[in-house]
Image 1 (cartoon, rainbow, N blue to C red):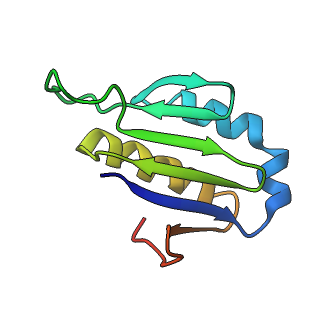
Image 2 (cartoon, rainbow, N blue to C red):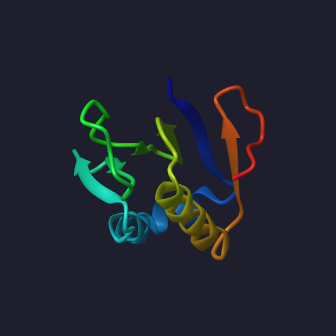
Length: 107
């Protein structure tokens, strides 16, 4: 079962203006594995995997004014990359990361 989070931007104009840079940042993550249809990005941990594991651990969906995250697994490499990604965004603008029920997360 996966956990779902919403990364929302206090300044949605910053998000739309910097979308290309956000994509560049996602695709430069060590755990980036592939993108689908320019709006879905997949991350896969660098730790050894079992044959039955999914071919991704995280899916990020770039929506109109926010980023939707679906986290299926969070090995250390995923946690490190997501933390670095969130820190990079926070260095530019204010964000909130809430779970699917609107409860603030520890990210």
